[in-house]
Length: 119
Image (cartoon, rainbow, N blue to C red):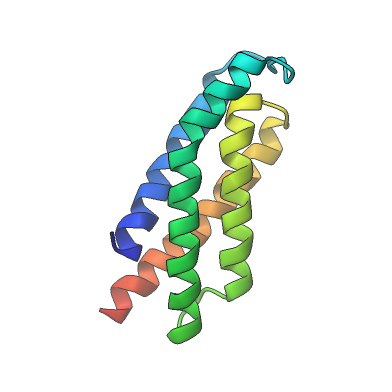
């Protein structure tokens, strides 16, 4: 897949994780082994997409004139990982989750704009 498609897929994933966070009931038992296994299984493809995007985006911002800085790509990659995990464990305040969510969307939108301007 292309960087553009990966970026769009991540935006959609972030919307789904946001919805899950907002609609879920309270924190979960972090020592529940079955829950951990379910999270591990469900998130493996999410983390794979994030890693794939990170590698492509890193190359894109290093090799082209873009408005996104390599540090923003790194931070966004890390923020996406946190959003994925927080959407299951609900171990962060809503305000902090929304800040991460908005930050990720901001950088992903800048990436999409840069991609469109490069082609």
